[in-house]
Image (cartoon, rainbow, N blue to C red; front, side, top):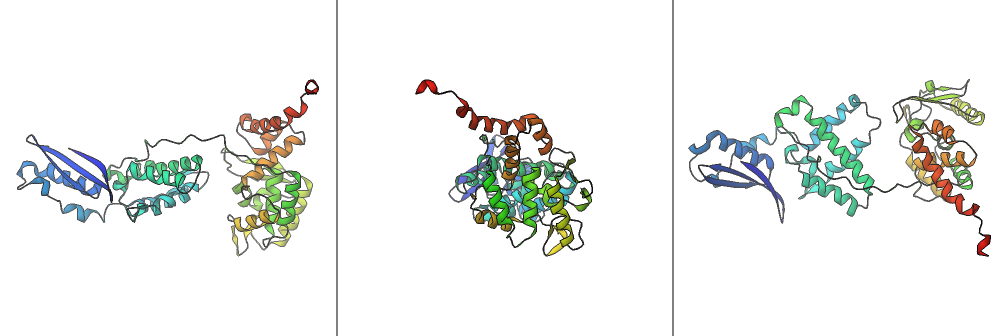
Length: 361
């Protein structure tokens, strides 16, 4: 017995096949669950089935469709239990939303039964992301990791064990990524950005960007910073549970401490250094509209991301004469190899300038 997948003009179908007394019986279905149910009934009744097996359609499949989990229900379960997985960020949850709404034969992938989601479905969805939406190979790989992580989690859950799911993303090849992009702001651009941020409708933007450019911290490390982790007397700030799995403390310069003290006095009672303007009980994680406006007002390219301010902090420190080891500790890199990327960029700019070209004159 076997189930094979083939493509038609209207989408995918599933062909179930079974050998009985030397004769091969087949039947096609629009859903994989129907093909599985057909084989299950044939196995149970075998040669006692009357009539032509190729014309036999199991009614049981119709009754099981509503009970079987869909991709959307699995994503919902995964989201509700995500906090127990000790993940560093929740990007995969957002990325799974793409697969949930992706259309297959006018039906969203999320509405399909989990058992009907195939490698072909996911491969095409990922290719469309690159070829139609213009996303990078790196983005393709991140989304592939997200959907594969969902199915790996599903296989470990007791409620899903009876379905014997396989991971359809397991054998999808990752795309080869380039060296990546790193954009840096010049000192003039940094000053223009800070001037523009001071005119923002959100007063916290100026201090937030100041922290990114001074400390080189990651986006969420600053936006979710608590006052409990900022010692205004000693000037020490501690970022908890960072990307490399460790807490990271650093001593802030006096101008930064002064700005922090002034900012705290202007806030209502809150645990967050950067609370939402409309609700001080939660951090302001999404400040993109303020960032985009300040970036535009400063005349900075739309390609510059918040993470590029971290790159800018590193390259600026390098030009100011700090050693790679000092920069590594400041940025909390797990190895010096990560930090050396900035040195390579600096060498690329300086090498030709230092060459003696008198022989060419």
